Amino acid sequence: MVKITDVARHAGVSPSTVSYALSGKRPISEETRQRIEASIRELGYRPHAGARALASSRSNVLALVVPLRAGIHVPVVMQFAVSVVTAARQHDHDVLLLTQEEGEEGLRRVADTALVDALIVMDVQLHDPTLPLLRALDRPSVLIGFPARPAVLTCIDLDFKAAGELCVERLAGLGHRVVALVGSPPEVYVRGTAFAQRVVEGFTAAADRGGLASCVHPCEASPAAARRVAEQLLREQPALTGVVVHNEPILEPLIDAFEQLGLRVPVDLSLTAICPDEVAENVRVPVTSVAIPSTEVGARAVELLMRKLGGTGVPEATLLAPRLTERASTAPRTLTS
Image: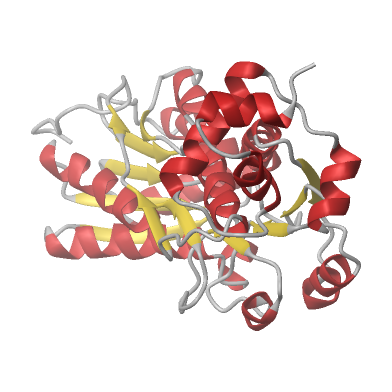
């Protein structure tokens, strides 16, 4: 059985330094922490959970707060959750998943009972009512998402504003001059969900900058709603040739609806999306898309939290640049379209 002294010898530090790295009782340098973590992984050291928790007054549990509100796409949320759990286990932490919409009361209950050492919060709203509490808690937190005023909070996410811009710029580069955003369900915008609002900001800014005619239409996540939106778009914008979709479940139904209305993708209508790669790849017409990097975001959120628990400073804002992959759903605008 590997002992803490074996780890210390392998990492070239004292046993007490290894203990500090595990417990977070005292700050150590980032270089030393990484060296110790590498030795722990290489040697397969597994500290006794009960003893370590007793010594450090920690539970070795992280809370992942994911309120399952109306309008969210659960499969994508679960991708983030799996990433967080996988990364947390690499740091010998478990994850408590909180899915109820309990607001401040739920967060305070979890924090006050010492069930968890730290929190990761998803589905952040622009004016989220839990932000004052998160700032006041004696436990560190990381937000996956950016509120309107993120000061003193640690936030990470895809740059959704830049993602919206990138989709429009790609369509504009192909010659499309009339574009539309088919967005998330209406309730997502009503409650001010940050990532959805950022996409609208980026879409609108890029369209205005490029002199494109544009409009934004929220859409329920159903084939019937996709058909209604397609009909409305063609009624209000008969010259439409470019569409950005930020609503994973309706990608294929929307393509079907446009084709039933006489517009083939990409011959008559180019379509881009912001969604996971596997969703874009498996549509009947593979969709040009900006990937949602759930694995990277979840893993980096955990890394930020581990550094905060270890007393190491972290950046307040981490924005991941969008990456667009060209597929079969986009083409240059033809002279007749």
